[in-house]
Image 1 (cartoon, helix red, strand yellow):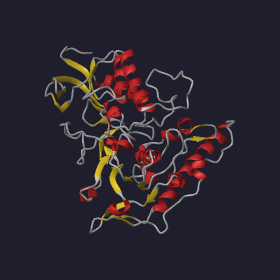
Image 2: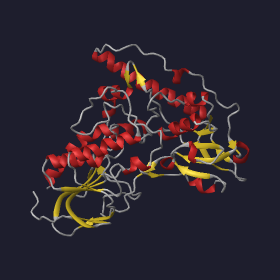
Image 3: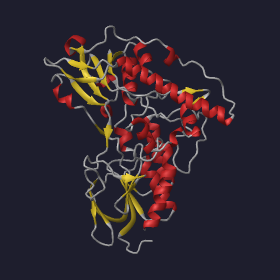
Image 4: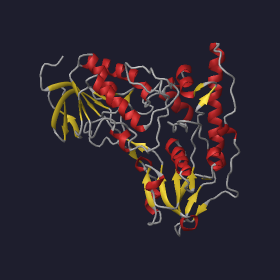
Length: 414
């Protein structure tokens, strides 16, 4: 399909699970391409995950396109390093053309035959199609109040947290009750640190339900196939993913039972330097409980409708333990009195697409404009975006079908 040897059929930007999955599909279709990676294969996973991090998907679902799990622990989970090794092995076995240490500094029109020009740290590359697989969850976001915190506090993002041992001595305030916030707060508590957790309106998932890892039920029942438009219609926005523990259920009440002090939403800095928190802690606990119950109800209905012989549900200790909430609710914290020396921001991520210099590809906020990963600009695609098409989008088990669909589109365009 390539008439000019200097022009590739496609370039993939990013060698994470999404980029490698796209490359695998491109290779199967015989398309000339390269994967440009700013660092190493799985760079974000290597450098933006804490030491005790584990995948939330079970081993049986943590597989790349064309592979299947054949180990002895299908419900187990991979560590950070094991997942990186899985990606490296996939690239090696399939002979994928990864070019490490090749940062893309600009994507622009090539001004000839619809080609695109990628300026990199190693030179210029021309391609008819470009798949942006650099991710939209790798640049941490902090609230506007972060710069107003007392100057003596150590502030780090979830992506920079590695272990409690790396932090200054003293208590730690974790801000954000989603995946990272809940797991990092637990990691700190297990290390014996005094932990305050500023919660947020985030759902929860039991790690296991009715004899299986809950992710297995969510895939089989079609829960993860709900379209992005429907999610927005129901929730009026794309919600944060529910808190799911990698090895056991993590709930706010279970964290409080471990001695973690729960707070409402972080609301800013008061005059005088005290930290302010909203009076919504109990509402956050109820919201997580309701979200968990709703998912279980969905699974129960699927089991009944399908006539599946599944074990009856059993109480989950993390969900039945009594919550130990501060009484009265803590609305203000003096960091010196409370002994807080570190704040870990677990307040979300976004992607860095500042190097994309093409009209109509990004919105005014610098976010991708696309329909199921296909940009309005012919030949430009996005892979691996969170909630791009369905609830499943952004999870490793989605890349096989996503890669097939996008590459078939590329074949048609080429």
